[in-house]
Length: 214
Image (tube, rainbow, N blue to C red; front, side):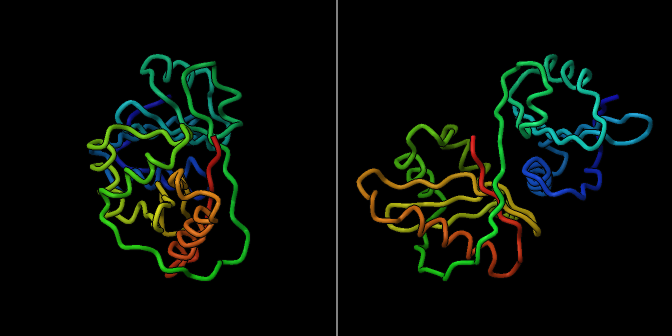
C-alpha cells in the first residue's frame, strides 16, 4: 500500500535515488516535497519523493511494481529512478539515471571565482549542448538558492566554466552538471571546474561523490 508519510523514513543505503530524496527532504521537508511510502506486510519497500510534477523513486527490498505502475500512471509526471527500477516500470515518461562513483584521489585545489548564484544559470545555459535540462530562470533560482542555503547543493566556477552538485547530504553528493562556454573549450576548463568542485565537496566532509549520466 502506498500512502503519504509525515516524515522521511530511515534510509541506510547510498544511491542516487536515496541521495536525491534526502537532499530534497532536507531542503523542503514535507511542506513542498511530499513523501510517499509503499509498505508490504508492514515493511517499507519503496520511498517516493514528489516535487512539483517530478518524482524520485527508491526501492527497498521486494517492492510491488504493479502498484508503483498504477501510482505513477494516475499522478503522471517524470520519474527519476535507477536503471533496474526503470526496466521494471511500464513505459511512462521518466528520466533514467545511472550513477558512477568517484574513487580517485582528491585533486589539488584550484582557485575558483566567487560569483553570485544568479550568475551560475547563464554559465550552465551557455555551456550546455542540450544535455543539461534547465527550467525557467525564476524557478531554477528559487530552488537552487534554497538547496545551497540548506547545504543540499553547491557549485564551483572558473572563468567560462561551471560544475554543479545539485544534490548533497553530509555523506554523499551528486554532480549533476559541468558546462563550458563554447568560446572557452579545448583548454581543460571543464576538468578543472570538476576537480575544483570535488575538492570543495570534500574540504570538511568525506563524502561519496557520484556523477550522473542520462
